[in-house]
Image (tube, rainbow, N blue to C red; front, side, top):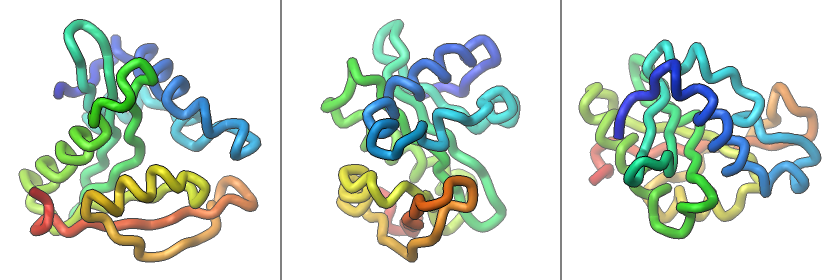
Length: 152
């Protein structure tokens, strides 16, 4: 894992677009991570890249807050999916939260991303509520949390 750099911006955008592409027709529009401006996130040190050899295989966008770490996006290149890299990225979030001394990792996802919700649940996250997406009328967000003490 390494921090993203400004010169990685195009690769971050391309991987995110490819990873979330299956959801665009389901949602009737691109998921929020696809429309995000990643340049400020890279500058703030929130974008971490997972490389396999010389290829960008996945990434995680992780925000540091005083009382938690917030996962904004987990994306794995379609060419690398099915190799448990999403779990590796979630484990990295646990490690970062522990190193930051915060008690929990939080995330939110679209309620239609049932496969992702199941993956998060299987990795120790529990649902804490559902709410309307303030930016996309009709979309429901699922909030989830994992205490760092349970992160292994």
